[in-house]
Image (spheres, rainbow over the protein chains, first blue to last red):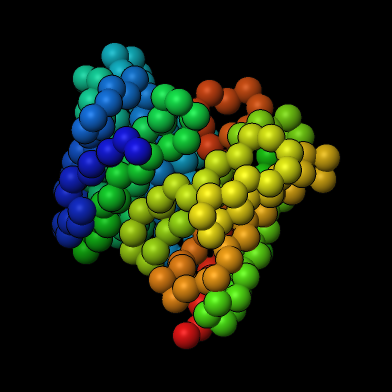
Length: 115
Length: 112
C-alpha cells in the first residue's frame, strides 16, 4: 500500500509555543490529505481536509486560526498548532487517500504534549 | 448527524476462537466500508474494505456487508494474541469524496 510518513512522532512543548507537524506521501502524490485528532480511548475526529494549492477545509468547531494547515506540494502537508495549550495535547494523525479504492493510508501519528 | 456505531467492548476471546466485530451506520447511501486495526499508541492500519453486499475474505479475516440492515461486520478466524487491538469501522458517506467517518472502535483482547 501507499506510504505516508509523519514527523515528528512525538513532541513536548511549553504552553504558548507553536508546533509544526509534517505529513508526507512518500511514493505517490496526494492532492488531498486529512488531519485527524484522537484523544485517549476516543475515535479519530476529522479536523480538516488539506487541499494542495488551496485553502484547507475545516470541520465544524475546529479553529482555523489555531490549527494552520499548509499543503504547498503534492507530497507535503503541514499542521501547525499555534499558541498550544495543555488541552491541545493529543495524538494527531494525517492520512491520504489511495487512488484505487478510496481507502485512507495513515501516517505514524504525532503525539503532542503541551506542558 | 450521520453516525457509525460500534460496541466499545472490550471483547475478549480465547486464542484460536472466532472474533466477531460489528458496526452499524446511519447513512443509507453509504457505499464504501473499511475496517482498520489500531494498536495502542499507533496509527490505524487498513485490514479490509468492502463495497458489495455479502462476504469478502482475506486470509483469516472476513468482512460482511448488509446494506439493507446498514450493518457491516468483521470476523477474525483462529484469533491470535497479536490480534489484540482496537478495531475501527469506517464508512465513506454518500456525497463525500475521500472523507471517512469512523466509529469509536471495539477493543479486542485475545487471551493465550
